[in-house]
Image 1 (cartoon, rainbow, N blue to C red):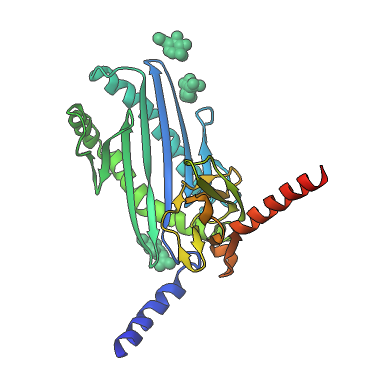
Image 2: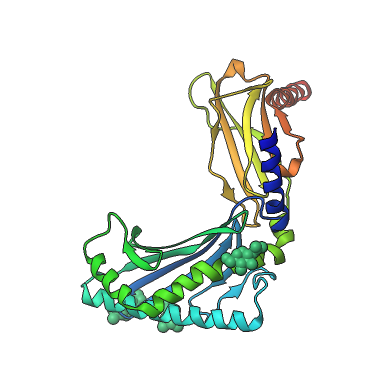
Length: 313
Ligand SMILES: *[C@@H]1O[C@H](CO)[C@@H](O)[C@H](O)[C@H]1NC(C)=O
Ligand SMILES: *[C@@H]1O[C@H](CO)[C@@H](O)[C@H](O)[C@H]1NC(C)=O
Ligand SMILES: *[C@@H]1O[C@H](CO)[C@@H](O)[C@H](O)[C@H]1NC(C)=O
């Protein structure tokens, strides 16, 4: 008892002190893809995501990172923002030049695809972790760790030479460290304030049932569709009464394009056992009022329609 009081006293200031949004961890990612067609033709495009939401985009045609959300400058001043834009602009052109030089030096073959993923994850209690990884032709080849670049475990041998060259550049290493360690969590904390209403929004799902292609003779594929919900975490299960049907197959959660999500859950059942099954949907937007859709009712409606059809025609 004494111990749990102690814990409570310790936990309360932590949760009250931080932003309301930060009851869970938030991932902030810069994702870049650079396609080098040949020694003179290339393009680089990037986007930035805060959790599930895209906050910024940066196309090859643009000199500056553009805000996708009106709150995407966070709490940074215009001056800080311009300073960051300059760093990113210099970074993009030196990245392009460096890759072209490495390609020449190491006789790498075109076309080349490079992907870069960097950012930070900010946890409740003002703790953050950061990362910066680079992939070449879809394979992770190197990362920034602590204060220097390191090869990925399975990286080809030529990566060691790249690492050696990169690590000689102390200035860039310090800038990367500063961006990841200091700027990233500060920027995220600002975004959590300015983007609060978007980040905390709740959009209720719509759900409907259908039957999929028959999985075999005498079997039905029951499909439960859940669409238009936000945020992403979603629980959906085929049930009979309170009993969850372990055969439920969840699809991937797919984006709808309007910042909401779509998910389907299917169940393969013997045709005679479908009646009485239901699809149960739990989501944060529903405030504890689960959706329950009964298969039997669909069956009933279909049967009635068929009956009416034969009755009248
Ligand atoms: C490089 O690729 C572009 C686009 O495919 C092409 O137009 C150009 O002629 C190529 N240049 C060389 C030097 O191969
Ligand atoms: C991408 O941008 C660079 C730098 O501005 C430019 O040289 C290059 O031609 C652009 N690539 C494409 C495919 O437009
Ligand atoms: C979180 O930590 C950073 C330094 O890492 C500090 O500048 C900032 O003031 C802290 N924020 C809060 C809410 O404690």
